[in-house]
Length: 217
Image 1: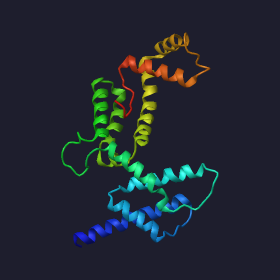
Image 2: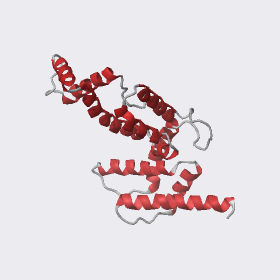
Image 3: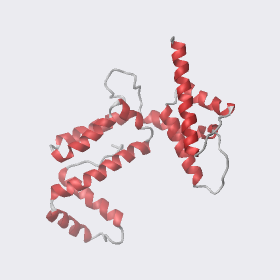
């Protein structure tokens, strides 16, 4: 098989994945029209990664399900979502995954590596599982899953929640109670649960110098 045949097969696989995901997401077998094939071909030719198209598709359908108006949607209707998410993807990964060099040019990976370095420097054994999860995000497979800013923030939010009980265990019941009592002097936990919770864990992170995991520096 020559290079042209290889590229054609990649395009066919790309198209098949898009068709299959579209049918599964809609809940029935969808016959893709020539106009929709044109949209798929344009995404492929423009270098839009498959995972970006699939995630944009999910976003589009989730948004439409919340609307009162029901209509039949075509694949070309999601083009704006694809382009918007593709721009996020390019900002998130400002570089090429084909390079054999270190990924210092990739802001997402660069940020994750900075967090790994910070957590590792604390020498807290209980955080090793979190460090491992972060490290997996820097692999090629991990990077490919970080399609948009909301995806990476969702990953970080999950890890932040895993860190919280670790910090409470490290602090001990007496310290946790003391922090709650101090916060209760100016925050009513019953009136604003989320704000109190945030302030509480902010204090615990500050005590152990554990950073909040976020894509923002």
